[in-house]
Image 1 (cartoon, one colour):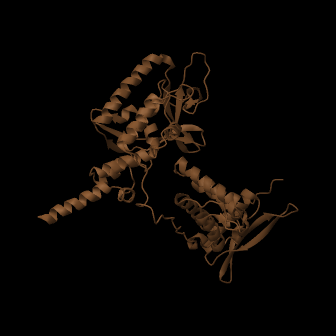
Image 2: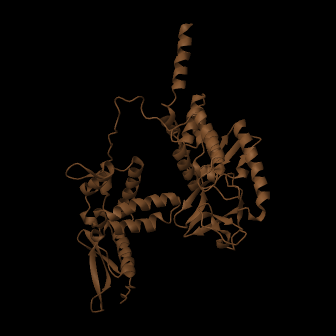
Image 3: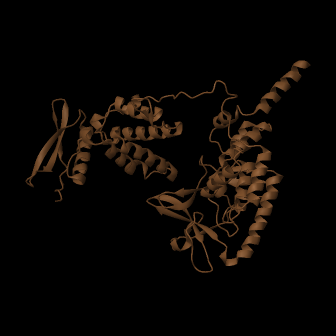
Length: 458
């Protein structure tokens, strides 16, 4: 049965040093009775509390006892009211949801707010930092990575700050006293140098390109469509999503430069491939040399030949900008024509063009990386490329992201300025470039020593 609404504004009165607020609430027998609650020493603050209390009662039919709200309930309200309507990227929302799932299945999710202490929260994050072990010291659950722990702290801090303001359930956040741990790293005291980035030599790069250009799988399908993404990554250091989202109007072949405007990703909510701004939220210009200019010239000509060969069966792609729950989605739609009218379910398809909103215009997308029939190359395609090369050329430490590190290492080794490398690779801060590549170049270190020797010899 629906509760009765309290339409009155209520009232505030002073008793002693504090103000009290009161308004009518429904009794079990259906009558309305005046209830009074303690406020603060400020009349204005107490009036604000009264207004919130009436709004809460009219919405829920009761006044919540802040101490009885569970962490899970608080977390869901925080996400629904503070995070979901924000401008955060879809991938960020997904990472928050992932952390929330950890909290939801853990015992702290069911704890009431009045039961949550600094010790309880510290124990929770310590479990994630160091893993869980049984009485015999056997690992039950793995420790989380540093990046995962950053996400855990972002969510936990957000939840309890929300409890302080605007909810006013707590006077202060217990998370402010929870310590971040520094995990000890395993070291090999008999090994060679410290950790190395996954990079490959130029000869290894050529072997990968040759393999993908000439070999076929057990079904007779070739891997030629994987070659161009590998070459672009090796010669420009673009991220996988940036390569997949690259279009021909982003590239000036005669000027030997390209603009990184967008990145492709799979939205878990819309179940659709979409486009977003690059990782650090900025476009950037990347210059390239004659080798890649020649590769791109031939690739563009080959795509035109493929288009003529497939005719109306050549797949076309479009972007449609839709607003869903107040959030912009740059959705990819694919126009597919087949001889028999049957369309298979394949990972490379965007949503079919028939599913697009007829009232919103479609923007043509001329992707640089695509298969012979026009099908777009996605991040999933590039993950498959990793598997193909690793399974067949297992002596080469190949990974698409490793090609990005190879590019950065080659640039530094060739004497490039760190600031230039930062801009070319799209690092948000030069410290990322310095920390990533400062220790990887034996050649540059030796060159610096040789220069000093020459100076001292004069």
